[in-house]
Amino acid sequence: MGGKRNDGCLSIVLLALLMAACTSEPGPRTAATISRPPPDDPTPTGISYVCEGRKQVSVVYARNRASLTLDSKTWRLEYHATEGGGFRYFDARHEWVGTDAQAVLREIGQRTPLVFNCRATART
Image (cartoon, rainbow, N blue to C red):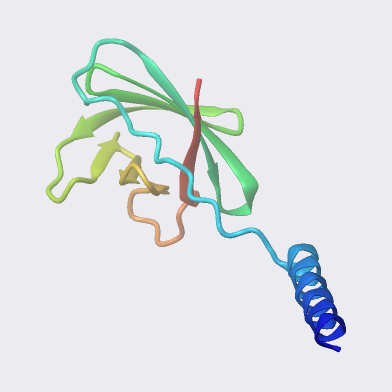
């Protein structure tokens, strides 16, 4: 009598484990942040970003400048030091601001950014 009870309990436990394995969702993946090079680094470093709406931005950083390409337009932006660990590159009309984790490109004086929630996806 005791053997049948243990077999039944074991079957229930195995069934529960099997169901959990089939229905559980994988935990969230945490991607490592891709850091920009130091602003004064003379070696060009390219980084690809994906922004809200799946828009692609490519940036090449070197010598206190960033050459940023969105769609078929390219801007050459100058570095400006910021407090708090963020960055800001700008020219007379545009600015690329943010942190290594997230950035935004906007036209100076406009409320709506050109792209936002940009996250680095790869070095190029």
